[in-house]
Amino acid sequence: MQHIPLTVMKKRNKSYAAGNHKKIMKSILLFAFLAVSQMGFAGGVDFFKGDFKAALDKAAAEGKPLLIDAYTVWCGPCKMLDAQVFQDEAAATYINKHFVAYKLDMEKGEGPWVAMKFRVQAYPTTLFLSAKGKLMTKEVGFPGKEGYLEWCTQIVEGKVQAFEHLDAHHLKLDFPEFYKRSFTSDQWKRKRATPEEVNAYLEGQEDLSTELNWSVLKGMSYTGHKYIAWAVEHAEQLKKKYPATEIDDLLNRYIMQKVGSLKGEETIAEMERRIQSVVDEVKPSDNKDIKENLLLNLYFSRKAYARLLDYAYAISEGAAPSPGLLNSACWGIYEESDDLKLVKRAIDEMHTAIAEEPHPNYIDTLAHLYFKDGQLNKARKYALEALEKGRARDMQMAETEKLLDKLN
Image 1 (cartoon, rainbow, N blue to C red):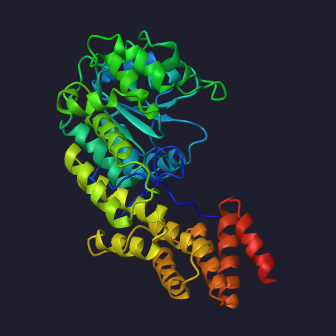
Image 2 (cartoon, rainbow, N blue to C red; image 1 turned 180 degrees about the horizontal axis):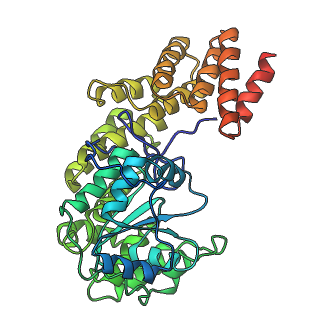
Image 3 (cartoon, helix red, strand yellow; image 1 turned 135 degrees about the vertical axis):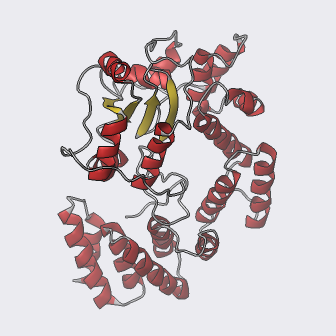
């Protein structure tokens, strides 16, 4: 029932992120939220109703930055952002006071053009524009309420400057067809670009750092095209023209390419040395997080679950790892390990996770572990609890129901 994520969080109190629910974004430090007056709260963030141009005009008229919630209807973390931030009284009051807020479905109307302009490819993404409509920064994922409000306070306190050449009033650049094809509003007609298409296009460009060429280079980086290496070489120059989050994301992708498959024939020790070598070579700004996430993924892919749990605790600064990380590791133990000592450890770890966050999926994992350990009464108890809590959330609990069938 539980899937191992491609990227995992290593610390507590972090939330799921970035469009695909199987991916969990990297750790973001929690910050104290600026106290705000709660007077005048009217039931959530007051999102502007109107088209994109009208939202830009409203921000200009009020002299406020524009906060754009770039979402899709199918995005689970987008709904978490809505519930935990936009419907939170203190958060909504703060956002309403300091921003013009605007929701934009990235698969309808002007959404695909905004996505192409600002290279929005994961959800939720929050775009912060100045009152003049110039991009200040873009943040991907949902880091929890405290993390999200820290993004906002960075803007409000003037710690982020606008990129004057990244103007939202000019959306429709002369994008190549393969680029537009990957952003079409009809998700069934989208087609991924090929590295050959991207290489051929960029080979003919004199300046790869123009807005148009950067959009192609960064937006199509999933193809693994050869110009990613150029961007790594010119990272500091590019950070003067584009949000650092975009440059760091590209550096992360490059590191993953250089590290290669985590499931190769090398020993774990050899892969640990390779990861350290590549991180030292590229020197990304968040190299500690990147290295730690790569090592966690290495241990996941090699099914070295005891090592994974030990490392997760080692880097969690004296606290328990995130419930999501514990759950993924312990589900792997349930599926893959016949070591009953490790199974018993997994049971203890899941009690830790549930004490932090009693999610139905986590309780389901605990029930399965008790089943594997032969403690059938406890397996039934927790399976019933998982089923009850899951149905209360309108979740599909097919694996829990199958387990109960085995127990009856």
